Length: 311
Ligand code: SF4
Image 1: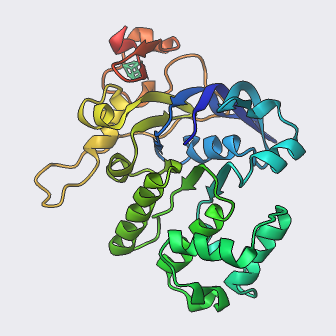
Image 2 (image 1 turned 90 degrees about the vertical axis):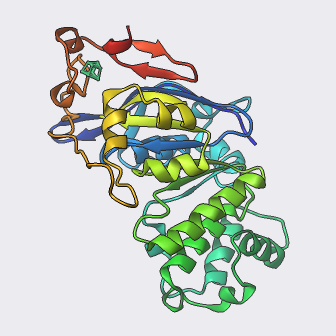
Image 3 (image 1 turned 135 degrees about the vertical axis):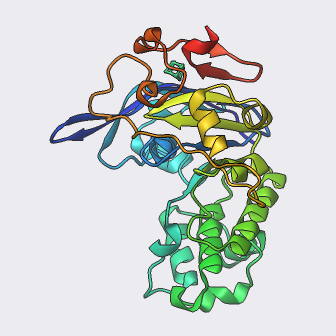
């Protein structure tokens, strides 16, 4: 297991209209044996956060902050140091929509082979591939297959097996259950739970708080590029503090529909011009005059919340 510290992380994307402030002052800490779920609506910075940790932000730039894995300061490493020591070996990522990224003209074995060669693995390739397939409960015979011969759930397992090939201790999984039916979603959730038992920490990115609370110990809620609430999954699920977190939880349907579903009116903020006040101001049912100023970071039992209500 790993200790991961992210502090004051800010990331911009340069566009022809100006800088998009995709992440601003994001903070969280994971101790040994902890996994984290990152939730929030589309465009809030969830994937940018994952890509920052594995240093693969296309077109974006980390402009401030610190990321530490164990004793290693990731952002101070050169690209080749990071590639040699960390990427895929200590931290790997299952990208969003990854099951559609398998190359249709190569067998699974050929695609696994390319990764092992690229990262100069010295292990017995066949044995490494078999171990990885065993972890995701796929038959070894799948190595001879082409992607079009596999179901959606099998392809998702294959990309998770790829991420596990070099036995990383921290896996970032970006929306790994999206576009899968509920039965396959349940299988992937069980697979992620079983990885945790094998000492793999997970960062699970999802808009689905119910799925996150099943798997992770910590949850970070992102809104408009900020982590507006961070804490234990129990505290966030049972006693949410930030009005946005409450809105997210109120919009989860129940099985029998006994609860009236709510939605959060309005649109996410424009990250080209974020201003200095609370980014949820225009949509917040509890907004006050002072919320036009940057909200304070208030300590909670297990983390923090960015909101003037708890000053
Ligand atoms: Fe709402 Fe103000 Fe809290 Fe922002 S700081 S979430 S506007 S109450």
